[in-house]
Image (cartoon, rainbow, N blue to C red; front, side, top):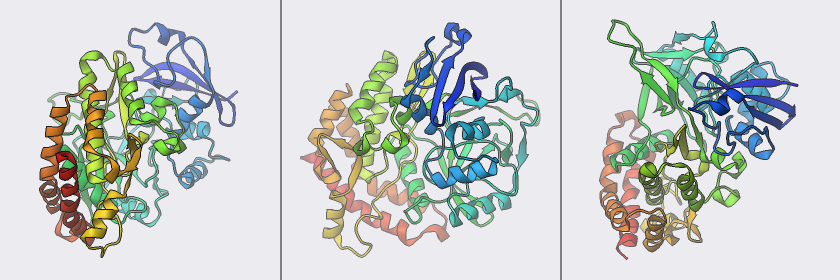
Length: 442
């Protein structure tokens, strides 16, 4: 029976067996059950002596891989596989997935691999990778070189590299990556620019947000996201010392709640905001609950403000540790403001298009942004155990300053990236900000 060893922070914690295609069994090792630092590979797969099987395990493993079926097939062909079965893809690419989990053939510790190295990569080579994804967003790997064994979840074209402070490198074997490159966003022209602006503004709004930059490489650009599931430990003050990169255990909320990647949106059966609050209540230590809940509520409100229509369960994650969980920084935060309606719409039609934009999580019974009143947002804050006054004051301050924040972030782009889409984002934001200010004031 095919099997893989499962590692977490360098410890062999479990065995994964494939019983049949899309049918698996996970068994935690006895030593891991007694370890004082024990933790589950997923909140949906609790630590225990009994083997775990069924749809929840299948969904968890499947969620570690790209959503795009074409990407999976290309990876399968590159690895010499007959099918894109998730177990076999994890055998080939599972040494560097999101979080700290690693998969390896039985008896082969992935962290002791003699082939695990980091090779410098030039700006010209990075630019070639960027162009490849712009031309074909299933091209997540470089066909001309060994690009490592990482697996990134999600639907958008992307790739991952490392940078420990001494330049970009291409990981091979099990060497960790540190940054995710997103050259384009499917279905949204220049979406990488809009995501950069929106993520920058979220951080300006004092929301715990992943660090992003717009990287320039030999005439090409890409959104570059610093991985919060990687931690650099200083190797010391000796000349030439390079930090050691550690993986940090985390999972997205589709995995944590046991739903499939096809159910990541609430309207397809994914978690509601109440489900998320219940999960945080159940797993975050009391002394840290307020911080995680505040980040989540701020994320919901900010998504409403900027019309972030893709804030589904796979775009929220939790850190998992021996003492419980914490919500991670926000990531994949963007805005539909530049794209709603028609480009030549006047203010009344643009106003209507904004109000009719559906968000990923509904508040009360409503998905459209225009149907989500501040009374309902106040109820969300109360359900989270937060002060409605404090949340309202924060939201009012962000809404008042939103046009200026968007304009400031947009102005930081190089002149050749001051595009019509970026200009439309800046020009339209005051319309959306006025809607939000009016809703809060009611």
